[in-house]
Image 1 (cartoon, rainbow, N blue to C red):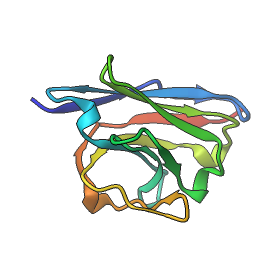
Image 2 (cartoon, one colour; image 1 turned 120 degrees about the horizontal axis):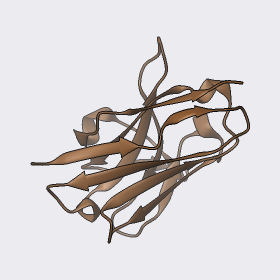
Image 3 (cartoon, rainbow, N blue to C red; image 1 turned 90 degrees about the vertical axis):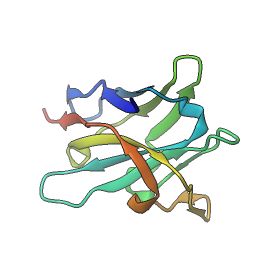
Length: 129
């Protein structure tokens, strides 16, 4: 059974950091590019960062302004999202998803949910003092 499970969310103060994990089971994670998305209350889901499966390159969107870093550990079949200098606007449910296509332009990720195949259940991140 194909499954993605996110973990590592929680409550953090502004300026703090969190590392989210996306663990895969039922398939080999490095077969796919992986994208991280988030959905804040009352807002549409948006992509934030992704990592290629072919060359390990990472891409982000302008929404996180270089504060987040994606990495992967193929041995552990896990992808990570390191989030630094968090602010209340980062409060959201964070999801990872496998990407059948990785669209980039001008060095930035162009997220498209139609390119996502498998999704995790999400992990809540709350940034508050």
